[in-house]
Image 1: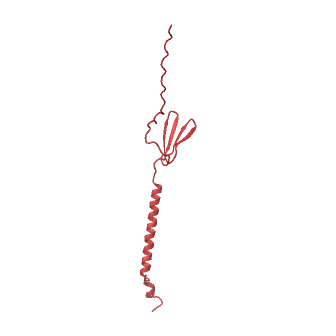
Image 2 (image 1 turned 90 degrees about the vertical axis):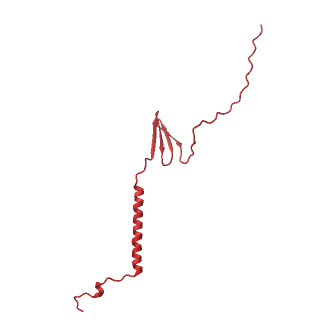
Image 3 (image 1 turned 30 degrees about the vertical axis):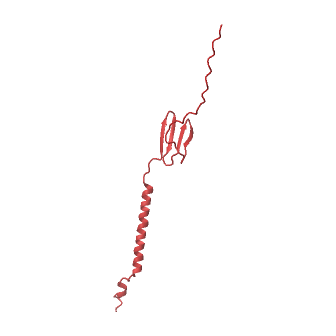
Amino acid sequence: MSLNQPDDRETRPAETSLSDLAESALRKIVTAIVLSGGIVALAIYARPAPPRYQAIVGDGRIVRIDTRTGTVIACEENRCMQIVRRGQDLERSLTRAPAPKQEIQPREAPAAPAAR
């Protein structure tokens, strides 16, 4: 062998074992899964969302509804009040409550005219 010619061992790639090959493939698969999960999470986070508030204006009043939490705030002349809080139950219909029962008073008989 001469000094100018490379040795056969140096030109041949080193043989990899089956476990090294499996570990390398597993690392690539895990990296691909983590990257794709990150891309999906970023896409979900960056998506446009519907408007958070809706407002109704009229007669010098404004009512603001937070569509995410369900909170309703009403304002009039620089004063605001929270009408409905998050998680508060609402009535199913706006029917009026029955009027309280009143006792009926018996009428007095009209007085008879005075006899002359």
